[in-house]
Length: 139
Image 1 (cartoon, helix red, strand yellow):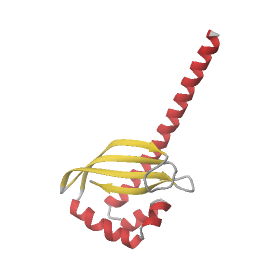
Image 2 (cartoon, helix red, strand yellow):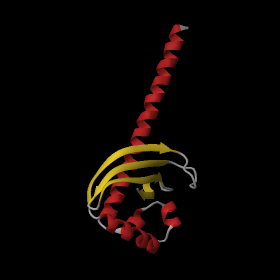
Image 3 (cartoon, helix red, strand yellow):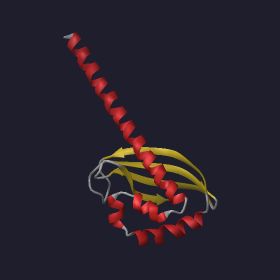
Image 4 (tube, one colour):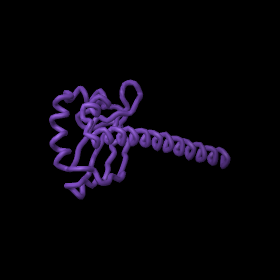
């Protein structure tokens, strides 16, 4: 009985380690997608950022409306000075969005005209399995 209990505990521990490793790999890929997408926005390549965004993002805003909305906001902030990862949280559901795989990535950012900003980038696993940005918010 003791051996069966030990094997059960070891099995559960191993499952937990495997699940944590998978979550870690998922959040890393989602963070990489967020950083690559932010690099486009930082370079004022707003049309390209729309092209590279998730299907959900592109379905929610036209390319022209995205460019019109993001350009004045980012120009007011000025040049990016620094960006540091604050958190990355995996979730299966978000308000107003279909169930799926999402990672909400937050960055502490410093811009030329705003010394303390919080950028929230929501990455999602798109229909083709790639991680792409589905949402962006600066506070």
